[in-house]
Length: 139
Picture 1 (cartoon, rainbow, N blue to C red):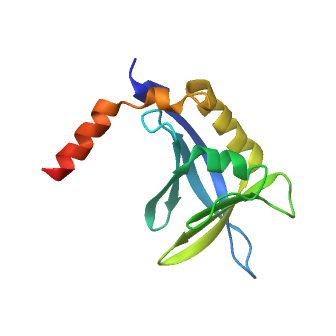
Picture 2: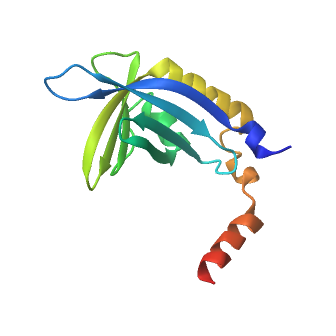
């Protein structure tokens, strides 16, 4: 069976938070591809186009319960609304704090666990393919 058939996708709406203005909705897609079993992607659909951030699936899961991450991506429960989770993205060009419905994120993660159980990610890595990618970048 192709891994493409196992890719988990969920559409959701994040809200961009900025001081002094109402939260702005940002359409997004959460993506879990078992070919990269440790990672999840969040694809934001903005007026500027498509912006994709990839980070550890464990980071997203841990951030539903407690502040997690350091550096470019931080995920934590919203202190003022236990039904929401905050994702803080830091880049050299700026930063953004986005809010999402925690239950929607948890449902997405549960669907990803139906494909690849936590702790079994290494069983999904095709080491020959990964080695070939490394070798082809050297040539």
